[in-house]
Picture 1 (spheres, rainbow, N blue to C red):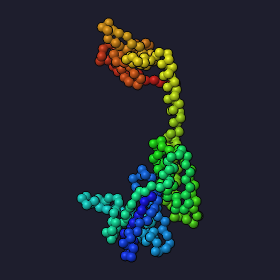
Picture 2 (picture 1 turned 180 degrees about the vertical axis):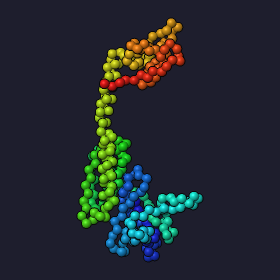
Picture 3 (picture 1 turned 90 degrees about the horizontal axis):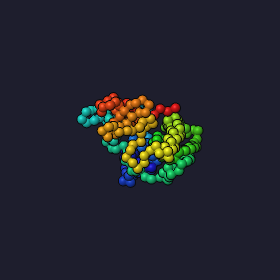
Length: 267
């Protein structure tokens, strides 16, 4: 969470106190934009109500969305983001981030998130961090269950959350589709390791010696001058360089011959 201070709404009576108010961070730690959601209280004397009224001055058309920008002093091009308001005071001062108990959610393979009303903000931060960032890096939790309790009359106030949930679901489906065949790839690696173990047991590899492991069908011999060369027992191709799986090798009697790619083909 963090503390916010808005100098524009500090009255002369409370200005020396420098009003700091705590709010939960809704954005994920890896996101480039810091997001905080404020629930505006109906009382005209409340801090959130004053902040809302101040920000509405920047939206004279009442669209409900304001994108603040400033001009580059050298090029004159618009740059997204603005520090000071019309009164030349900073919009907000930020103190944070500060630790929260919800950080322990990352210590478990399966976690359950339960939020009520505006208390859903830390849940949103955790879900965005897990789905969009931690899963891609293989970090826990692997399973995440989310429950939210809210009054039907308040749903309109949580438009930001109702728009976020489908985006997270789409990211989850994309993640599962991409990594859905991970088990098959793991099994292929296990089979390859088992095959290598059998080759070692049969003496097909030369552990502890400088002789390279050759692809199937290749053998080595020495020329009349004592030079070591390699040849394919079926095709007759030759190479001065040891052939390896997936790499090219020289063929023919000289060093400047053509290049032949050697690869394994699955069944």
